[in-house]
Image 1 (tube, rainbow, N blue to C red):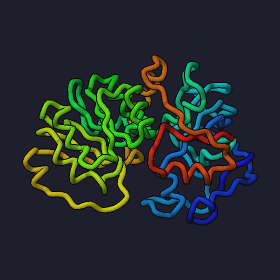
Image 2 (spheres, rainbow, N blue to C red; image 1 turned 180 degrees about the vertical axis):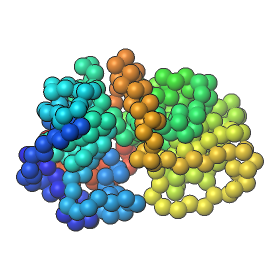
Image 3 (cartoon, rainbow, N blue to C red; image 1 turned 180 degrees about the horizontal axis):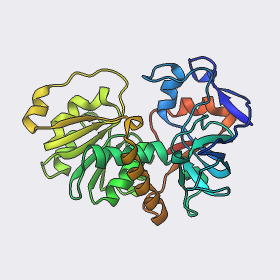
Image 4 (cartoon, one colour; image 1 turned 120 degrees about the vertical axis):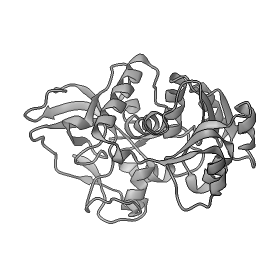
Length: 320
């Protein structure tokens, strides 16, 4: 099979498209013929060697894919050969024509969801769901501010929050992105390229402040986030690219909570609950990933450059 292999850490150029042995499932394992692969920022951090947990070299990147079950090992009962699935992690890496998974790493992909959209589910939607409901304990009727709402996690959070009865305020840096955020269910959208854009949050929340803020770039925004929180508000840090200075009094005066999350830390029972909710949302059409770019697997290096560029619009997927 063809796969992307990384033999040394570094820039996008270390992603090599080459031949790799076909994997075969053992007991409790599932082999998926991959039709589409989701590209996530975390994969660029791992590739560059700037992540807390790094795989042994060489390795095939990726955890998110969608396709059809090609073969199963003994003891597998949840899926069968021919089942449509999306992956939430793999044993061998998702940037390939085939991916080997444990049975718990595959989830049913409803017939109404194309493979490209299925590949965009796991990290973006599971992150958004866990941030909103398992970390922030968001409740219907609350105001949620979603930074970078036009990106993969942002789109997912917008759809999930709107379906959950929250009043959604999204930010995006391009006119195209802001239009898309409104189309995905946000009640309000603001341009985060405009200086002082967070000043609008108090007016949009009837001078209450945001009950929940989903923060994709904490090193740039966390200090200012604390000034527009409601009393008892919660900021969930989903992404950060460096350090930041905050005024603790802004958190004290609001009795606010700053919550971190990394999807890979999610307990197994919580993760099962997340994917049960996501599959239901896919089935009824509430959740529908937006695909921004489709790039051939052989050009994975271009995808890694694109996923880190400003002006995010939907999800980037690789096609093997």
